[in-house]
Amino acid sequence: MRVLVLVAIWVILREEITAFDLILGSVIAVGCMAYSHRFLPVKKIENVDAFRLFLYLCYLLGQAYIAGFQVIKMILLGNVRADIVATQTTLKNESLRIMLVDSIAITPGSVPLDLSDDIITVVVLKHKNDPKEEIDDSVKGRLEIELLKAQK
Image 1 (cartoon, rainbow, N blue to C red):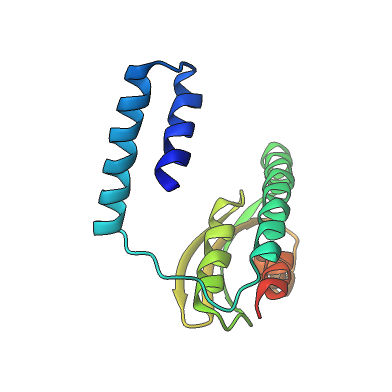
Image 2 (tube, rainbow, N blue to C red):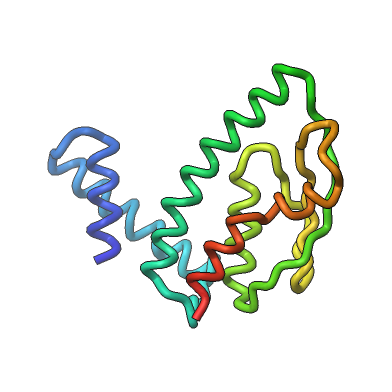
């Protein structure tokens, strides 16, 4: 099934359906799957509601766009500073903690530096006059709340 999905993506990206594209797409799909199985072992995510995780993905995409416009505005106005913030997460599931850090990474204006157990260290861009406590809360903010809903 996965090979068919990868071949379908290949055909969509190539914008052609020829025998050559189908064969080449199949070879590439099998090669990618063999490579990922050998070198990128993936643990099964347990104790997580898949539907809530899908809703989280939709929420995350919206937040990434909003944060992008906020960062653009701060930079254009010259009202920005960078801070390194360490914040604690309440997520118990290791996979969800990793997803939270990855979510912070794709959100403009923040770069995660470290994840140690339940402490996340992040470089974050904020307004010059924001208090440090507010910055600490805004790093994980609603992202963590939405991920908590997916945790069983």
